[in-house]
Image (cartoon, rainbow, N blue to C red):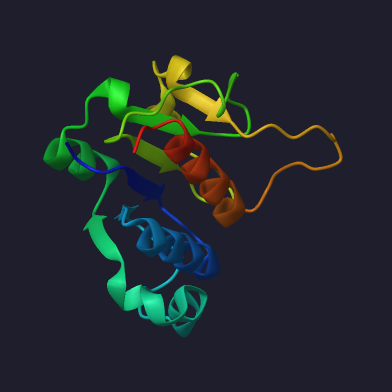
Amino acid sequence: MGRMKIVLVTPEIPFNTGAIGRTCVALNLELILIKPYGFSLDEKSVKRAGTDYWKHVNLTEYDSWDDFTTTCQPAEDKLFFFEEHGEKSVFEPQYPEDAYLVFGCESKGLPGFILEGKEERVFNLPMYNPVVRSLNLANVATAVIYQAIRTQKF
């Protein structure tokens, strides 16, 4: 059985991608990046956030969401989408070992065409104070990743 995969759709901030890549290295998870990016993967800021670990990231890149779904053909029950407007909490599902944890870009989240018809698969990380509109992508991804691992039996 495959390992869990982290999918970033059109990430914009290199520091977040680097930090998420570092978490993926720590947990032996694949990082999937969907183009276009708001930065170059060669930027020092990506490497700085990933520190010396960026060279160890198990990285796969796709030119578009369609390229990703056509190539990987993920089963719908393996896809978990994370948005602040998700109706269910990240604490509800039992995540399969080969889940795809999908996150959108920092400024816009996931595009509507990706989420259309998949509302039951969209989850949020709870925020209890309405003063906070959103959380940092790298922080959300790390919290979700560890919650997903917690539900698995290793």
